[in-house]
Length: 300
Image (cartoon, rainbow, N blue to C red; front, side, top):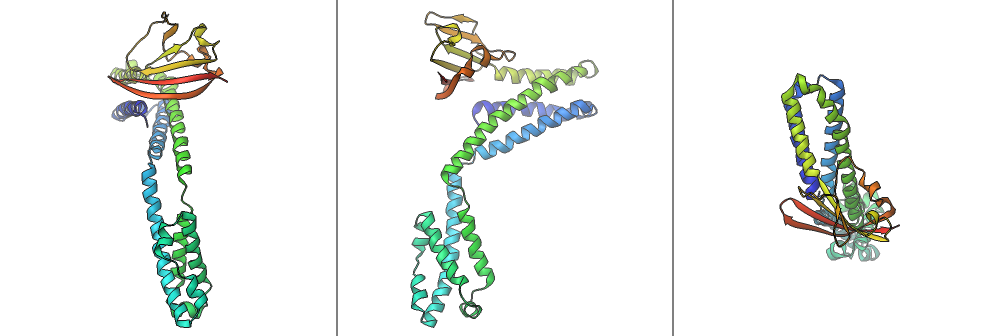
């Protein structure tokens, strides 16, 4: 979760805490209770997705290493029992197949290590009941080895992990938009019925919502020459968040500066649907709460 989303989530918590404080006021109104539940559920989805998004590849690597070690250890125990039986019976062929070291089971490439573990497993399964008894191999031992191999085989690859993280990042952005829409289009409108009956609740909610909106205030600077740059093959959009406000104007360098309002569909105004979104750089200016994201928009 980036800093902007993290701050927005903190703002959500202020509203959620306020709703808990005044639970007896709004919970008796079914329409409000339904929307509050929807908002709470959406925030819960945000938290779950954020947790998945933060799953580090390093954590995944450590987990993968542990699962591979467990597979190697279980295989080594089984290999020892099968080797001992093969030596007792004078079965040189089986004894030769069991010449698998811990290095091959743990330090080899994943597919190679799995292949060696499978050889040991197959050899144990192929033993007769009498041989298994003589070697001290139980059905539970064989099942345990099978499970260790399968658990390791089913772990996602690093490429799959990165894809999962990317998907969760995209999902998180959608969830925040949906949560904001619940507040803007539903919950805030329903609050006005409490303006007279419970002004304390109404005023505190509106103050909290106002803080959230100020936090979400966004200013767009469009580097363009034509009307909003719609006729260009490529435009540069700088998006910054904070209290900075630009009046509608164009400077001598042809930079159109416009203040963003939550009531305006700027994607339509700037005709950004005609462009492909390609991130160029993400810069934290470290100037108060201001952040800047530079994006190059190219014609489709």
